[in-house]
Image 1 (tube, rainbow, N blue to C red):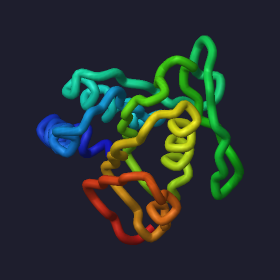
Image 2 (cartoon, rainbow, N blue to C red):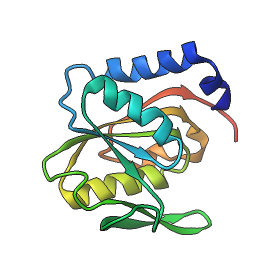
Image 3 (tube, rainbow, N blue to C red):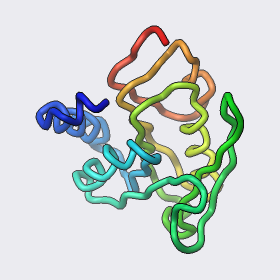
Length: 151
């Protein structure tokens, strides 16, 4: 991922491909996962003229938050966002750098369901198909730029 970020032409092209993918879709907010979703999400939100909403680990956001707990291969974790960041009925796009086991992306979808938002697309730079994450995400539209085989 660092190699992509060090190349401004490639980074811009990545953002442009994601924005093009969303043409014609009504998007109220781009929701980015800590930490690399914070790199890709804001320029997409700016290009679309909509809000950017960060999803963070527990106790990282000031003020009132809402969250969901989720399972990992090695335990559990939690994702949180500000209570009023995404309204019921909003159309959102989930953005992260990597789809591996699907736990984090699934938790983001669960959080959007909890507040009554609709996930119109999930954008990821890389997928590791061997880890089976996509299979755990029924009902989540997933768009990936690069699939990497192996571990």
